[in-house]
Image: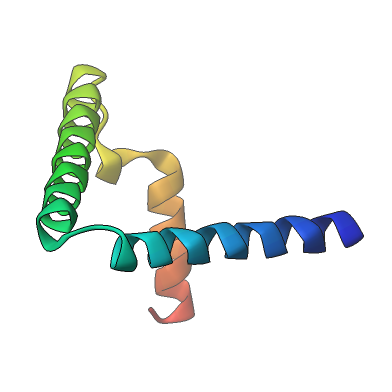
Amino acid sequence: MRRLRTMLILAALAAGAGVAAYQILLTEEARASLRRSVSQVKDTVETLNDKLGEHQNIDIDRLPNRQRTNEMWDALGY
């Protein structure tokens, strides 16, 4: 339990340092460039996922577990 708490504290400190560095150390131009880069990476990952799904001929709506899950949600009234 103590190790988990230590890891959570370290993660929170690292996130805080990242936010502070983003706000204080980066210029507006650098922030805009970083946002564009993140957006490009996100678009690339989405494109790759779409292409891989097409290549494997996966139809998400026809998966057996998905159909069963939808039936269960319908039975619950959602």
